[in-house]
Length: 492
Image (cartoon, rainbow, N blue to C red; front, side):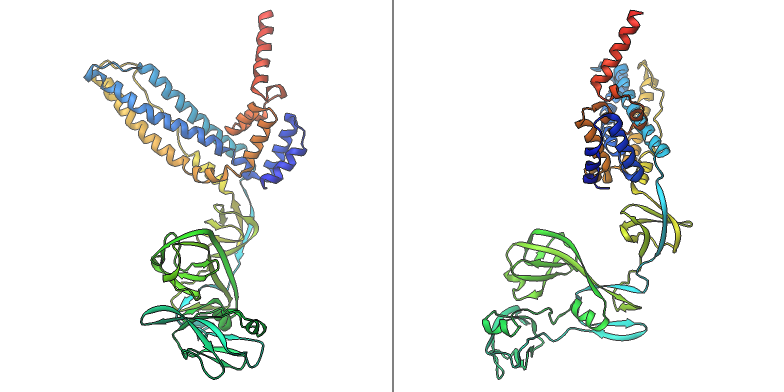
């Protein structure tokens, strides 16, 4: 459930604690993820307690060495140990509340039917470099580039046509202006054949007809969707059928230097506004794809959109030299990234959500369950034990000093383990805390003046929240109630 939906529900609810609690229960019942996401704000306090413990360890070491140095620490050992125990108490309370969430929360799982979604379907990454052989139901076919050509709507095409031509020769990639008529062309690279403009040289990578009244009316103005050195999605679908699926990766300003971009995966397509598109090769090297502007003439700052594309082809199809991906499944319920799917004795994490789930490992078809990612994160985050150690109350000799030193070493090891456990929550927490339904619920309580209730929710103290009376929902109300009770006791 989106935060906007939660906002509408809470806006219509009574502003009293009872009304807010009803809204909370409704959201929790309908969407358990918001219940477990209460652990996210609480985990920040636990992280702060860990940092405090890390800072206290050197103080304890100072006390361990005092018997040798004779230097009196600024604080007594009892004071430092008191702070250590306070931080340990905070972490123990946090762990206890996580376990309460796991024990008392709604069901962390729901039933799911898993089935092969793209059985017999292959995703072919395009564009391909050069001609490829494909095996289709056991038969070899060639997938190769089309001869660059532009087909118009008039026969013959008007002439002369002014065409920008991108050519690869011994000197690299260059662009020429070509004047073409039915009888001749200025460089012999193109010819007009009836209603079609055709490249006559294999060195032609790409061509674009200049816009004139005649070329527009003849339907040949603009860009041709191919390049002779690369097999495009158009050519794959021409031979194998299927449909093109494009994935948007990013958009904005992209920097390039000497024809190389960083942070963009090989095989991605970079579309530069007003210029054309380029293929990213290994090492971030840009290659001309659908453009008449050589890479060497590109500015250093590109206003670009980065995409990836595949051709999804049905049937038993495999491109020679391409790895075949068959890990997609369908699910009867919507799943999200990080959820865990369990079928029989098999388990697999969801790495791409939706009703078509991509799983980290293949599983069998059939009935099973899906476990919420947030539940698993809370479960992993609570996977640490309390730290118990018998500290000496004073340093009377070398034995006490050694005992403190051993305790500090054990404490640091424990802190490292707890931090690893909390990191199971932190990666999701930093991102999801901004969008989790629980964050919206906490904020609504605070806005209604119920800061005490909001504090309990933010610390994942669900039991304490549910036990609140109306006059205890704010800290001021809690103090007033306690004051009244004390006054009654005094009067007695």
